[in-house]
Image (cartoon, rainbow, N blue to C red):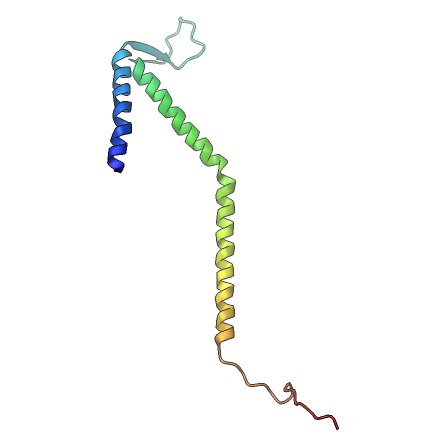
Length: 119
C-alpha cells in the first residue's frame, strides 16, 4: 500500500520535473560578482535554466534545514537534561528499593519500645 501511494505521488512530480526541464533548456549566465562593470571579467558559469532553479531550490532546502536545526537547539538541550534527570531518579529509585528489600537489622535494646502496664 505504501509503495502504491509513493508511486502515486512521485510519478506526477517526476513528470512535472521532466516537463519543466524540457521547457527550460536554454543556457543562462550565472555571475558571482554583483559589482561587475563589464571591463573586468567576473567569475561566471553558463548552465541550463532548470539546473540553476533546481540548484537554488536545493540550496534553500539545505539552508532552511540548517536554520531549523539551529533553532531547535534549546529543545535538544532540554531533552538531554530531562533524560539525565530521569536516569538519576531511576538510579535513586533502584537504590531505595534495594535498601527497602535488603536484610533488616534487629532493633537494639536501647531503641526498643517496651510496653508497660499502668497500675
